[in-house]
Length: 154
Image (cartoon, rainbow, N blue to C red; front, top):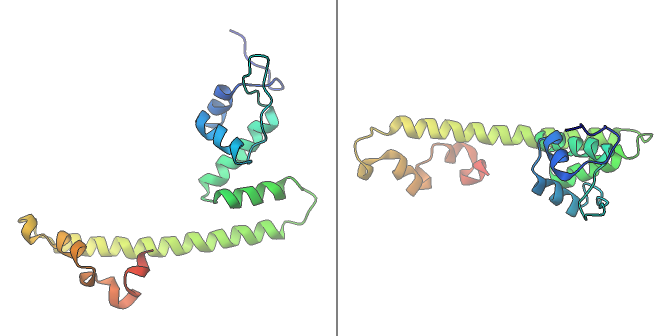
């Protein structure tokens, strides 16, 4: 079996393998416009270029960083215009960082509440289980008074 030269078009299976992405995800990104529509060969199979491999790697890495599909779309648009100043990229990344930090804060509140609730459970019976009791009555959550109720965890 011969290897495919890097400049030759590749199939969806190889693209998926090289980018650690499922073929369904490749098709989805193509459908929503994050990847260009792939040309097809005589057998009607999609064929992808090295540029598409690089673009998909960018998309995957941005998604791994937690950027939304719309943010990835914006980043791709900016990356497609390399001579432009990067202030918009910086702004988008700073907004995303603020969202991540906010999410971390909410998760820390959730962690603390779960620790507190689990520590109060004596493990005797479900009828007397503190975890079930707290889940049944949100007013018993310790974070309510200090953090604005259920909204603190959203």
